[in-house]
Image (cartoon, rainbow, N blue to C red; front, side, top):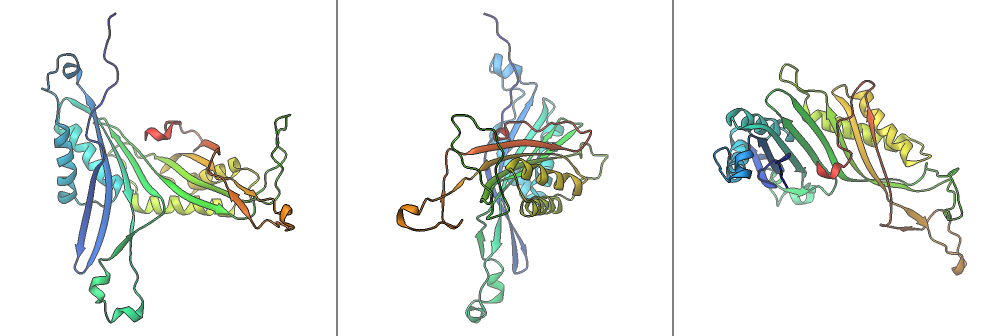
Length: 307
C-alpha cells in the first residue's frame, strides 16, 4: 500500500544549560532546559537516508551552549528567539524552528546578622536555593517570517481556605457529593498565554516584566474572587490577565481541583467546624478553558502537555 511522509521534525531535547553572570561579587543564575525541534526539506533523509539537509542534533545542542555565552540569557523568550532565528536563517533546508524552554528559578540564601561576621558579605551574594514553586515555560516558533511565542508556567499550587462554595449543581441517582457553602479551593495551575507579537516590525514585549505581571494578576484574581465554581475563578484569572496586559491575546488554563474533604469526626465525639480535612490526590476534577481577547483566534493547543 503506497505511503507518504507526513508532518515531521527533529532536534535535540532537554539541553540543560546554567548561565552564571558575574557582576563583581554579585552573581545571577539562569537555569534552563531547552528543547530544539527543526522541520523543513527533510523528505530525502526519511526516504533514502541521505543526510545532506540534516544539521546534526549534536550541533543544535552545541549552539544552545554557545549562544548562552555569546548572547547571554536575558530571558527564556529572548534566548529562544535568538536560537529560532539562527536555525531558520542559517540553514536553507530548515523552514521552521520550535524552541521549548523550561526555566527553574533560584533565589539568594538570606543570612542572619548573627552569621554575617562569619560569612563575608561578598560570599552571601553567590549562595542560592532552588525555589520550590512553579516552573516557567516558553515555546517559540519561527518560520522565517512570523513568530509565535507562547509562554506559561506549571506546578503553581494555590489555595483559598474560605470564600469558596459549590452548590446548586445537577443531581442524579449517582450523586453523593454534599453541597458546600464554605470550602477549601485549591489547584495546581498550568497556564499558557500567547503574545500578539508576531513579526520583527513590532516592538517585542519586555519578557521578564510581562511574566512577573501575568503571574501577579493571575494570583490576585485567584485570591480576590469569591468563588462559586473553579470555572468562575479560572475565567476571572484569564480576564484579569487579558484586561491588564495588552501584549497577550489568549490564555489557556488547566486546573486540577485539589479536593479537600471534611473528615467525619462525630464517631469520636468531636465537631469538625471546617477545621480538619482529608486532602485527596486522585481522582480529581480537571477544569480547562481558554480566555481570549475579543476578536482574537484561539491558537494554543487544547492538549497543553505537548507544549
